[in-house]
Structure formats: C-alpha cells, structure tokens
Image (cartoon, rainbow, N blue to C red; front, top):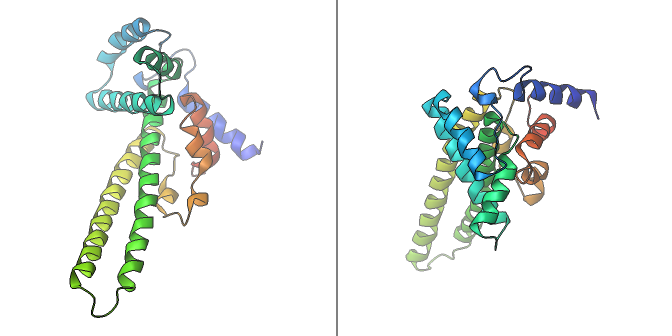
Length: 214
C-alpha cells in the first residue's frame, strides 16, 4: 500500500478509536449482538448525546434500515433486524452517522446523474422542435427543463448540507469533487458506491483512499 494511504488510514484509526476508552460520546462503541443488548446500550448512551447528534444518529439508523431492506429483499423483519444489528455492532456512534450520511450523498449523486441525463434529453428535444410545430410541445418541454433544473438545484443544496455535517465529524473528508456532474456511469466512484454495503468500520479505509483532502 502507498505510504500516503497508510498514513491516512492511521489518521482515521485515531479519529475513530480512542485509547483507554472513548473521549467523546461520538466514539462510544455500539453493542448490538441482539435487539435487547442494543436497546440497553441505547438507553445508557442516549442521555450523553446532544439533541443534534441524537437526531443524526437516529436518521442514520433509519437510512441503514431502509438500506438493509433494499439489499436483502424477501427477508422478514426479524432477519432484517439481525442484519442491521450485525452492521451496527462494534461500530462507533461517529462511524454510523457518517456511514448513514454517506449513503444519503450517494443516493443524491445517482439521482443527480439520472436527472442530468433527462435534462440533456429534453434540451435536445427542444432544439429539434420544428418551426411551426404546435407551441404546446415546446411549452411542455420547457416546463420539464424548468422542473429538472429546480430539482437539481434543490438536491445540490441537500448535498452541501450533508457534506458540511460530515466534515464537522471528519474534517479531512473532501466531497466537493462529487458535485461535478458525471458524464457517464463510469465516472461514478464505484469504490465508494460499493462501500455503502460494507461495515461502517471498513468505510473509514475507503474514505482514506478516495475522499480525503491531504
């Protein structure tokens, strides 16, 4: 492995773990070998979390619940809870929050890609409308262009907000390059796309190699 990456991974190890016990509630390790153990752990840790961190953690849990239901279709609720517990167990509060928010940014990135493709298609259609054609055709296409443009702008605002939140927990993360519209699916960072299906602890290594600004 390149020395630069080794150094970055070491940095993430320092960020995500604490010698002699956690120095912050964000570094508390989740215990979730069962629903009962997780509920006991959550009852103990919850009072030490601020309201904003608590909300972000619960949002991340909901994101990961949805994620497990998507990647494991056909499983019953008990099986999905077991899979979610396996994902959470041994991770820190910080890791789970960043992991959940990373999944959100990845969804936004894919949605942006699809909307950008549709925007190009509508612009091409508008350019090819023949003179003298029914004006309703042009108006309809122009309406779609306005709708897609507005949606892309709103999504960028969401992306910026989540990026800022993530950088508050891990300042070395640099997600700005993701805002560049991909020309095709091959431009998407598939190392990171695949990372959404990994354990949160493994995600820190992927960040170190792909999304840190060092």
